[in-house]
Amino acid sequence: QVQLVESGGGLVQPGGSLRLSCTASRSGYVMKWYRHSPGKERLMVATIGPTGISYYADSVKGRFSISRDNVKNTVYLQMNNLQPEDTAVYFCYAKLPFAMESDGYWGQGTQVTVSS
Image (cartoon, rainbow, N blue to C red; front, side, top):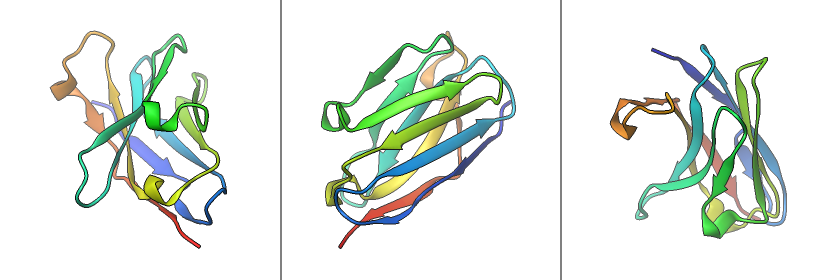
């Protein structure tokens, strides 16, 4: 098992920035950020593999950046030019590279609110 601890959410004005962090209790996992807001489907925002290869949802490309520090077992999501539609609870997710998606682990979630 792996435990995930998230931080960094909050309230920001449109056009602002936030950085989310997720620290895992173990190393070597594929790390992802998902978000979920009422009335919308859960969205995989960004993912990064153990070697640093990353992917993004089309809606955040060019604005969000995912990175990882393998020494600290921490993944970051830098979110720039935030818009009201980015408002959601953001969840960190981890799974072993060849595990099924259903065998992953979730953080507790952190609220991001973009509003003037």
